Length: 243
Image: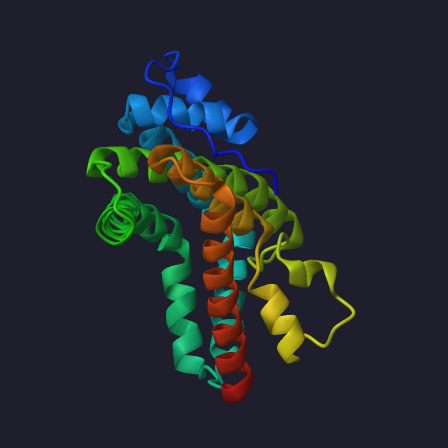
């Protein structure tokens, strides 16, 4: 990958508006994160990203297709870990299904800011305490929030596809491009845990942190991807062992 973060953050970055920063995260991340590092504004981007994610999920789960897809996902998820749902559990999910859109919307409304704050705190601790950086929590929080634009793009694209496919299994994992594999094989489970959008998000986050801390993007992105791959391997191994 091209090193997008080798240069220092400019002292006076050209001010970008809200929508310019959102678009910039996708098409010109380095220049956008230079602006974010110099002027760490988060609330507007966070609000729009959350709105896209929550509204897309709510719209899907308000349909019978989305509700049935949710039930099917719960059943397959239980089976992948070696558990079979009984009739009582299935009936319970069927009663919950009409309200799942509201439940998911409320959970995401609460969880997204908390997760972003926790992630920002962890990254601040790693880069400041362990690597000698001097960024503020507000700057790291802004970087994490702006990188989250990629997640909003993912949801906006995937939810309509899920409706058409009548399934919540992600169509953007590597496993979706390896349908020739047995879905219960270790390889299929591993590839099914690697999502192209997550890889993109990790790379964009690495760009942002590289710009903020004046470090090269390559080593940061490599570390993130190795950790992601390790988690995917662990999930595949656990699912294979329990199935």
